Image (tube, rainbow, N blue to C red; front, side):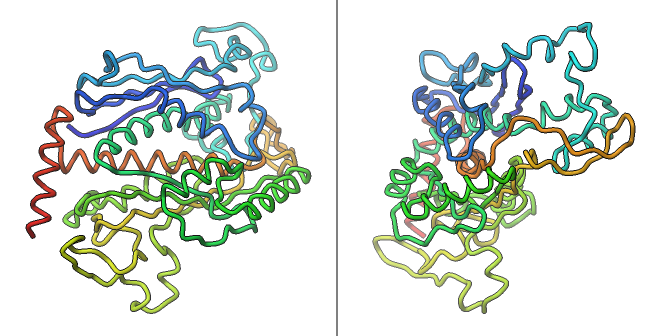
Length: 389
């Protein structure tokens, strides 16, 4: 069974829903840990007023009994507290009222899905596009990824992340372990390890917000404990680094992805790019460095997976850009929807969870079984094979 999920719901609808198929039976779920991950997504300097309204928690309404998965599809619900103010506007039943009362949107915002979605689906109320294309949907994707994290944790795989850059402010390199990085960045308002950089980023976000603008940045995810051989070289759509890249690019507002040293690899000689292979009785085969970010030939090589994504500035501005009214075809300055000046720290959390999902999916493809116990037996057998190689 392939691990997969679908989500449904709108940003101002009653709830976001995900259905996960392919999870094994007997996986114990920690509900506190699940909701902790959702709370992490809501933090971060530069977030807007919506984060004061929503206090995200996930309710599991199918596929789990007495704390353990049953092997059936798992249904996850994240309610929208703001729904109480949108009951009439987002009602699934027909409602009477003017366009103003229905809050019909006919002025597309540059950088959003508004106009493209309206043209594609022939929708004259662009709210039908923006409600679904909103980054609010990442709340339930984090819930899905949090379950994947718990599955991977059963096999000693750990995932963390950090913000590398916000606008012109870049975090300095460090030599922290993943455990140290997780602990320190969790206390940071912008998810960086360096306190001086944190202060600079906060001041920079304040400056951008005061100008009525928004700012993006670069975030990084690190996955440790991954075995050799997840993914495959034999077909393009089985290359795990490619699948991770697609998942990262599917996050709202992400416009670029790199693995390992990424684009830097195009600027330096091969001798400074490729990771030399070493061997010891204690470690077996390993690499002298990790410039390729844990991948060779589309497969994990046993080194930590390192993935970075670039998030563009949020396009909803308090310094609006020019657009065209779809009713009158006249120019106007784009209307403002409630938004964040900077959501890069939150994007770091989302990145962790979409990567966790892809790694869990590849792990199940490699060691799949119907129960967690069967997967553990398969995994132990594979590790023995690697040790004997």
